[in-house]
Every structure is written in C-alpha cells, then in structure tokens.
Image 1: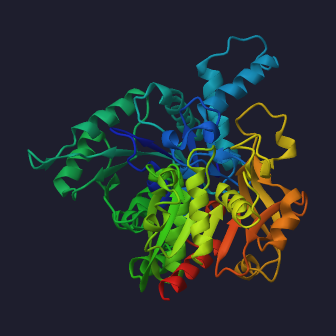
Image 2: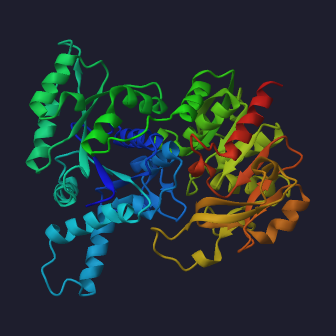
Image 3: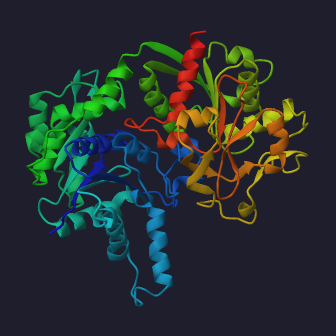
Length: 537
C-alpha cells in the first residue's frame, strides 16, 4: 500500500484558468493541516525546459536551487508553500522523450520496439513518483499542463489512468478545473462546455473526482446539482472558484468551498487537524490595508506581458505587506527611454528597478534609467542584466570609459566591463548551460546589503552567462562603485552599490526567485522601505 497520496489536477474548456493557483491553494490548505506537501508540473511541450523560450512565448523562466529552468507555476508553488522545488518538480515531454531515447541508445529495452505505451507512459509514471518515493512528502499534487483533449496531453492522461489503477483505492484523486461561461445575451451560466470536457476526460478512462469551476458569477445549488448529475460527481465535490481580487485570496475561498475537506475524505485522511492560516491571513490583512503608497518603475524589455516578470511583481506584493504600503508598479519599456525623455517618463517614481533580460535590444534605455536614478538619489535596484547596466553606466559616465559595454552587446567594445565567463567561452548549446541555481556569496558587513541581510554568507539563485569583469574592479571601486558581495569560490563580484547614494544596489543574482508569502525577500523589503522613505521627503 502506498504511503504517499497523489492528487492530479487537469484542465478543460480553456487554457489559463489557473490550475497552478488551484493546485498551490489546495497544497497550502493541506500544509496548514499539518501534511508535508509538494507540487509538480507536467508540461506537454517538446522543449526540454523553458530555458530557451522567449518570455513573450511562455512568460518568466523560473529557476530552482538545484539549477532547473522551469515553468513559472513553480514560482507560485514556492511562494504559497515556502518549500523549495527542484528538477523533479517540473517535467516536460521533451525531457521524457530525451530520457527514453537515451535508454534505447544504451540498449536498455533489449531490442524491443519502443512505443508510447508502455515506454513513454512508464517514464512519465516514474517521474511522477520520484517525489513520492523520496519519503519527504505525504501528498504530491501533480498539475498536468494544457487542456484535456489536446493531442500533446494524451500520454500524460494515459499515465494518470494507469497510475490511479496501480496505486489503488483512496491513494489518488483527480481534480478537473473547467470554465462555466456566462452568456450575457441569455443572462445565464452554461454548464455544457464542462459536461463535454468531463466526457472527454472519461473517454480517456479517467473519472474526475472533484470539479473546480471557474466562474464570474455565483453558482446556484441547482447548477451544482446539475453538474454533479451530468458529470458523475458528488454535489459536495462541485467547487466554485469565482474571480478573486488577488491570487492570495484563493486558499481562503477554497477553504470556504470545502475543497480540502472533500479531497481528504476521498483520500481516506479523516484525522487531519483544522487548518492554521494565521500567518497567511496576517499577510493578507497587511496587503489589503496599506498605510501608504509607493510608485516603483519597472524598466524592462518584455513589459507587454506581465508574466515575463511574475516573480518580481509578486516580490513587491510580499515586500509591500511587510512595509504596510501598496506598491504601484509602473511598467516602462526600456526601448522607449532615452536621454531626451527619461525625466518625463520617470517622473513621480519613488524607486527604479532595472529588470533582467538578454540581448542588446533596449539596453541604452536601461542605462539611461540607471543614470537618472544615480544622479537624482532615487532608490535603485538592478537585477542580473540590471546590475550589469549599472556597471556600464558608471564606467561610461564616472570613469569616462568611452564605449564601455558588455561583450554580449558589443564583442569589440574597447572596455568590456561585463564579459563572458571563462567557462562559457566554448559552449555552443543554448539550453541549460548558463550559470544556474544557488551560489554562495560573502557580504561586506558595513554595506547596504550587509545591513539588509544581517548575515555574512548568503546563497542566491543565478541565471546568466556574462559577469562583472574583475580587471576593472579597482578603478570602479576607487571611483565609488563598491563590490559588496563576492562569490567565495570564484572571486566573482555578485553585488555592487554606491555608499554615497541613499540606496543604490545591483545584484548579479535573482532575489525574486526566493521571495515567498512567509519569507519576503530582504532585498525587496529594503528597497520598498527606501522607496517609502523617499516618498515621504
């Protein structure tokens, strides 16, 4: 008998209904009852990971401590649960097929014909159970990307069908998330799309145990009864998920609907404690009742799609709650910034964050934003490429190094203050080859970051190929741009700041990946605090 219980979350009718938020919310409720919970995402695309995908295509690429480039849903999982994820928490079709083909090349299938069933489905089932077999979790929630009926999702649905049978009664359940559209002309909610979606799932051999229905309007008892009857689920297992003002409301909404109670009953876990959401609700209270407002400019090159900077935006929510302020984020496209309009574009801001990114498009606008923040004593935070832009701006305008640049943007720059890491120079493959995952950093105690972290040694997550060029360090430090965070193993500069500036920090790593509801990132908390002080001047 399995000791780990499995919950599978599938989606129907439409994409973007919020399977990740429902999975994270249920996980939060189960965790609040004392269970050890983790969530994994199965993505049906053939990319091995989202590391080479354009942010416009897939939103943010999230990075774990162990260096996995993953789907942005893993960020939601960590922010809700405050538990780190890993390589095992995100599986793609590309990775599945890559693994099976490598096994075939090694002769592991003894000359058999390699087929979707059983070889691909066996690989999927193994990946699903890695976390459960670790002994670290009581419940594993598996979100299956895409929509039921998609050709790409069929091997995953078939794997779930097999696994439900193999695990036995009360050891797994399927939650199906669907849409109940409202037809304004008829003035009513329609259940037919959900009925068809459940039918499609049943045609694949899976009966949904719980229906979660996304809706803009309250579901009546009659409607719930109709859905239960036509979709072959109990009425108490028809769960309403109405639009929320913030994703952080969803756990409480699911608690009110009884999602966790129904799930525990179906998994035969009847002795669970009452959920303790005190810490969560304290955060929500501070988030919804701010005592002040700050305006932060987010300078980036992918600002048209909010998901491109998802973790940064969520980090501002966490840090705003700590400081009891509402953080208004103004997205500013760096391609539209130049010396002639920077003052007008950045007017009314209390802080500037220059965002990560790749490639030369829009970098001159980022450099202009850095210069403006430096010259006007405006609180500044540069992340990854944003930190590199701060170094370039300082080299050009304070050291007067004409043409200073990163070799990413200009291979022939006379002053490569940012250059390709030595170990990256002979790499040709793009995917999974950057400096990734958690790396150590030693902090200078008497510095902005030293005071913020209140620690001498930290670990932060990275995702980049280019680095601060140590050959320019002495000149930059003498001119006032101090290196206050150093990697102890490589000697690479991780953090720069200007001590004479009220709050000017650039970091090579991505602090946004580690900010959660329970543990807001100290760098964002400090930055928002500095912006709040600036707003009161």
